[in-house]
Image (cartoon, rainbow, N blue to C red):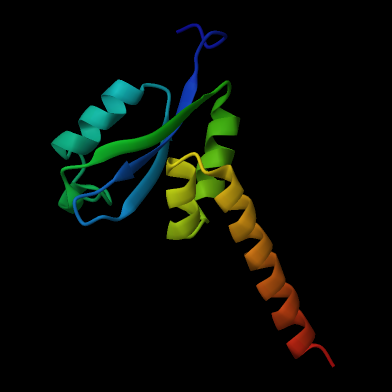
Length: 111
């Protein structure tokens, strides 16, 4: 397989229980099929089917895909919902609010 032209994808699924699942793959069609069919009974999405693709982006390398997947998995639901809506102003506002809360907590716990 020629990896020089290969793209990777980072995606968010909305599950039947309204939760989000974030993943990455090099074959988005196959991966969505696997999620929908329940290929792995241990998978998060298995008992939460059907799933719906609500966001995705293409990146150039597997490393980029893994880093972005990991970053998004660390986000709260509100920030993921803003990403799904492509509302980058809301994402920036959430980040500012998170930073303010961290700074306030830091000040309250310092001697």
